Length: 349
Image 1: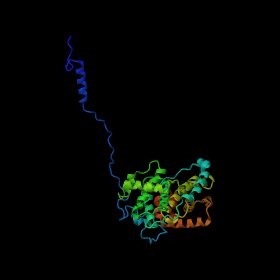
Image 2: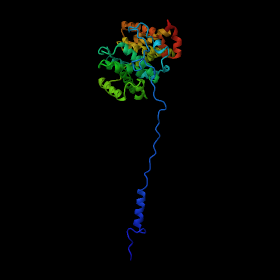
Image 3: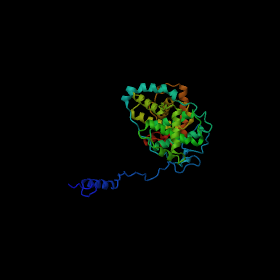
């Protein structure tokens, strides 16, 4: 009996080895990759022609509390162009939720006001002044409108900014970075889709890096002890609007119009350091009262809703009237068209 050679081509072992060898010589199969989506157009800053030396920040509002002679008016700074971004539409009222939780939420927020209220934010700032703060926030307000962010996000941004200023001295060349960092922190709490870091850096005309923004974000969170849920003007405006409708002191339509106008007045006050001494609830009720006066509401809001001293109410109202008179042109660009038509005569007077 003849035994076949192991290396013979006719042997089964040789055929099996040849198949294994051929399989090892095959080229590896390349996995298909998904096509990368690239941005067709690079990100552009909102203001492609910034003022020299300010990294894109421009004056939009005029502060009556600053030493301005009227030369740097909003129309002169922007060439008379309106603020970018559409005005926010009128909100809707949820009276049932207000009946169930309104008073308890209001009492809880009022108790938190003193803890989150930054007092004398610029007292420890050798380089940041009231004018530079007004300049930064006058830039951040149209930025938040351009992104379609809520008024709550803007209020939290200002609160985060001012509270950090009370704890840490900030260099003048890093102040804009602190502004966009505060905006990012606020949007992460409130917005479903916060702005991307790349978008915020593009607004600064490439003056800062991603690592700088992330590092400053960590510093801000550490200095504030991650305590970020501050009561805001936005919350108290909504509460007082619901309260007056629930009490039968105003119709839903006129209450919403007054709230929209009061929100525009409040946005102006956020940029002025003179109003940082007032609590959010005091500012909210005074903004509503001034809005009722400008709209000529037959039954104006009851100032006693806020439970504030009469002297503080009248002092805040007087400063708000001066603020609106100084920035009436900018205010009209913040409001819905139907609100501007009703209060245009009051703004011009």
